[in-house]
Amino acid sequence: MTLDALLAEIRARFQAGGIEGPAREARLLVSGLLDLAPAALITGGAEPAGTEAVDAARRAAARRLAGEPLHRILGWREFFGRRFHLSAGTLEPRPDTEVLVDRLLPHVRGILAVRGRCRILDLGTGTGAICLTLLAEVPGATGLGVDVCADALRTAVANAQRLGVSDRFAVIESDWFRAVAGTFEIVVSNPPYIARDVIATLDPGVRLHDPMAALDGGEDGLDAYRSLARGAAAHLADGGIVGVEIGFDQKDAVTRLFSAAGFVCRDAARDLGGQDRTLLFSLPRPD
Image (tube, rainbow, N blue to C red):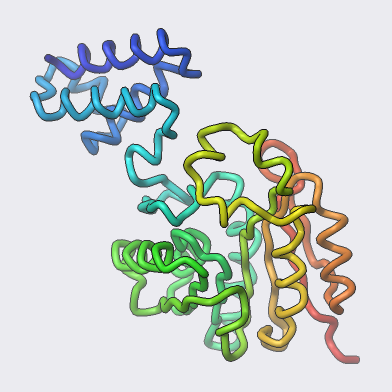
């Protein structure tokens, strides 16, 4: 079977199974499984796919048709142009979170240039996507990834090794700040922020395959932000920045929590869909 024929078969199965965007999903699945650039499916379409590749693609297609997300099947997802491997204990890094990295990068670069160091604390690190991307983009910065899930920490460490930043990245198992010591120039988190009664309404691909601990933000979705606002000041270096991802309707509520803890909102940004998505905070400087 040629690559063209294999792609056509998977596309037809996805179309018949009601997969949204069947052609795109088929391309991503086949190219991801075979580790081919999407363009290679066009230029090399007449090449034989190989029996093992055909069998693997058919098994993967069956999993996708059963509702498993594409990137869970592949075992990785691209974030900021880099591949991050997933595990059962990690949330899939998503494009909207790249906005948080974009807003933090100038601060990381500026702090490093002025102070000669920039220590990043990533709470709920998961795959490590946020912290590891900042380290890869800003050589010289260092990071500590914190997570309550040991599986997530192992995944973050493995991703750091693959990205060549493991010498500047360490991890610690902790429930938010509980086991964290010291201060950091950047404190960042993409915490669980889904209100508990909303979780049942989420897309099954999220609800059944992303770890519940990375989704459940408590009764009102704000539990993690309460912990972050309460503990951040004790671990923030002078002039440091706290950056968080938020749900589309949480800007005012999260801002109030941090304001009550003495922080000032420095920046607010929207995601690619125009929804409120990130907030940056700092402590007021003494007069």
